[in-house]
Image 1 (cartoon, one colour):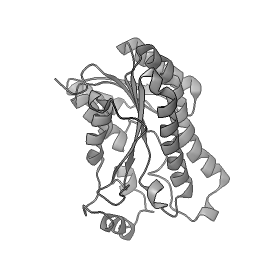
Image 2 (cartoon, rainbow, N blue to C red):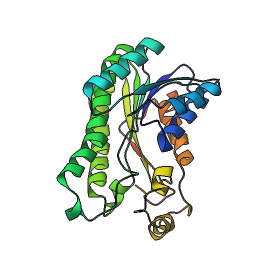
Image 3 (cartoon, one colour):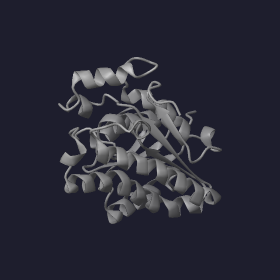
Image 4 (cartoon, helix red, strand yellow):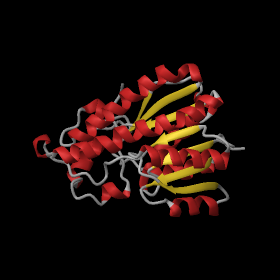
Length: 252
């Protein structure tokens, strides 16, 4: 018996990197997955199915209310409900670190649209289902940069600060409906997108690692334990919280 047996879980941004690791870890605990990305994450879904799990793969732009509504409807029809939403889709890995006065208004708006409004659209879409169930778990993904005020990524840091605030407000507003809303704040995680980004030079990664109590690079797999805990019944009396998972660089 897995800790998530029978739970229908939507994971956004599941095509690769951290999102794919989230999906595989949830499936390994018995979850029934509905995975989305800008292009249907068929590879991630196929890996899960080959291991004996259940997974849908859906193309969905989280900034589109209509697309997100269709994703939720498809998930509910297939699995009979939605117990958990993981708001993972975000712009980060491909962003070029730069001084704030070099960030264009268009880039700022795109980061905010995906990282903040995308999370809002997904929360809004699953609320009717979770209210009918009188139960639900919403897991947002913020960033340890919120607590550090990390420079050269102002649009990203601001967007993830908004995600922490969104988490707290949703928890307050939806608690009476049996809906819990919590947040994970990862440290700099060496996903493939980060490794491929020339903006994350060796010295920057080494400085980040040196700031940790546990002095090594962070991998996507380091985040899955906290995710499974928040998705499971084990965290049912926990809401509005942000768990930092970064090896002890931030302590709050």
